[in-house]
Image (tube, rainbow over all chains, first blue to last red; front, side, top):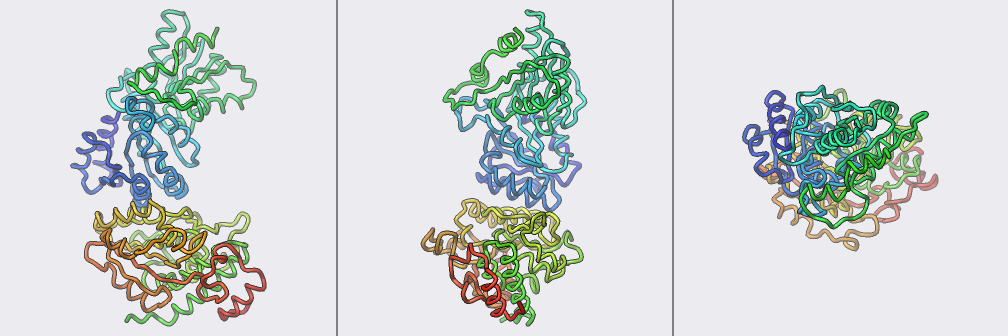
Length: 303
Length: 274
């Protein structure tokens, strides 16, 4: 995803001189080409995320569209108040990019696990929160975030995520993409869980005769509430899937919609990282398995 | 020695009078800090900043960020006096549903370049503005006014480190060094000394001035950049509460707002009809 992101951004920057890219001294072997191509609109701010975000806001106030780039929690939680006050309150187009959402840096431990970022960023007024599901969505999301006014958060995986989409879907911020239709249950996925979710949906169909609708909810804010309500009405069951704490992320956002929906009778389950301090380390695949067995969770919900 | 126009003194007096009225009206804190920087604001907005009240968003205007956003009354007062918005607005400071928050707000307030209030944000933002100007060869300068207290913030020093590395000689930081922060004197709470040396060590051009002497303020502001290719820091030694004797150098006036009697006494001292 990070390669797709930087290639797309380079393409955009070639025709839009307002685009700048700032890094907090991370992105080795990823950002060099952008820097070489646009040295005047590229800055390594150093290991100083508060300044990274403040400088971005200052640039943005002078008419620039400024991307800040770092990994895991560094461009988000580390400099949260700069995001809140300097970008959101001042209504500026600062585009925060975090590489390594969820467990992409799994072996490196809790400091490098991005597990609360969606919840935190989603709480900020004036913020758009986007977590694309595969490299194709990453390209489309990068373009959409760039074109959107105001501050945005783009949460990416890291490298070698599988391509899930067979072709380029229509993509608009705030509109879920339906990858698979079904009447028995809806799996709503955000971020890099999409490939896993599609796999589970196929498995449920093959082995259990359960037809699951799959929505890629690439935008957490503004949430596609219509798609959620429609899924509730038409399939009667919803499982949200995220590589993120079950507190405050996609599951909570969807629950907010369901709780205020007239006449809703829907079975609902949040699948994600339990809200407890964890000390596990390991590969992304391993750590995802710690969250449980998605197929089993879906069957349990429908039982 | 540069000679400021006589009216900077009159402007500073008016800023002070507005501030005591505004903090009285809103029952707001921070009159002390407004008074300590009134002379700096008067000289900046009369003689230094290239701004145009008719075009507050003019792309090549000099920028001013009041990083010590709790001095909002002072900034609004000077902007109103310079004609960015009607003076009548000042009487709505802190009002229910009003626009003039008691920390600096940009939204709906012409002439304000950036909303502030939490300390340690402004210098980074100023770095971004200065960097945009530098890289694009624009003529504008960026002035950021900081409090001494916000030099406690680590983020301030991230920006102090950044600016010289990027050769931001179009950036000027002014520290309103009134020596009092929230819980006591700077010396007691977290001593900043040697403050000027710290900025010098970070490769800024530095001058120390009397922040109430309009000639010294003007001379320093006209001399920027003090060193070629480097940002400039003006350490302005000031007195908290300056201009109203019973408020001068008193921690209490970081918090307290003047009651009716104190307002009348302050205005009398400032040569204003109540």
